[in-house]
Length: 389
Ligand SMILES: *Cc1c(COP(=O)(O)O)cnc(C)c1O
Image (tube, rainbow, N blue to C red; front, side, top):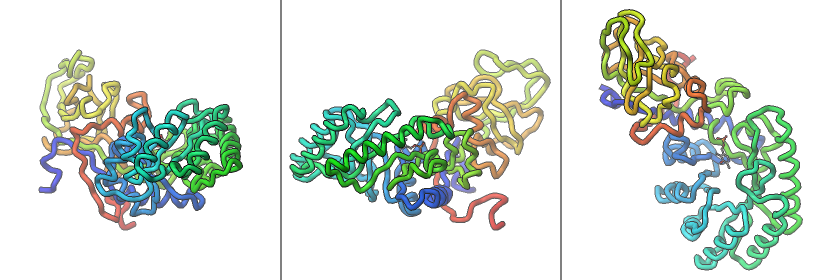
């Protein structure tokens, strides 16, 4: 019996693939450092394990959205440079400063709070000033940049702040040739030049996410921040597949068939009877549902490998389970139903699920819920037909 045989379902996380992806991305990054973005529990892959694996493979920075995510990594003993960028009034600024976590500042309210916390902590905060170069989301507008830079420089001289980074984020890096990419780069260069003229001496200037790391070399500056690509998922089908970039999917989502049974023609399937068997057939019960993060929008559409053949979700995805029509086949109860993975066994990809649910692959993996155990694999040689070839 292998360790996973008794599990209802599992998300297998291939740490060797993650390390290989980090190496591929570093090779793409034109000598820039690499930040492994491990927000949202490493896009559902498990923040602590993925952060450690990424550092082992040469990432020198980690990135999270919230300070709580960053503090949890430090509490688990994870080292490396660590930046978190999504702050709300109240912090926890002081805890972050004391844990050696870099913080992002997008406006005067945040600078005021962080300098006060640094004064209390008795050591300077490591700050990255964030510019809104066109995304229209977080970050300081160009019109407000002079005030923010001046205040940050004054805090630097007072010893409460060190300006470690100047940074921004793209709106459309996943749309090759989109005019906003060049426009944002121009604005970023201007805003960086302004801050440097005002005396800032940042260690790192950074704007590139995964799609920019893969396709916009002039965006790499000193540091690239890669999330989705590190998990072996293409940022967008328009850019190419993961394999086109030499990336290998890290997560495989599988379940044990909970029931295989024969039913007559004309049998309605699952809530609402949106699927009816057209002939006598066999059904497989997959014990995963929307509470596990399987999108209900993939009802009637999501692809699954069961009994070695691709099937389609029959009828509605329920909270805990869904059904596939096995068309007369009778795979063993307990055998694997694979929703997505790297494709070695012919299973669908996470992009197939994104398409079936009308969303992006980022949303599929980040929504796999805590009810699905993460099972870590760490063989340095990849499994499957390509191994040893
Ligand atoms: C999520 C995020 C990233 C990583 O984006 P990917 O497209 O997953 O590489 C980088 N920077 C910021 C600010 C982010 O929020």
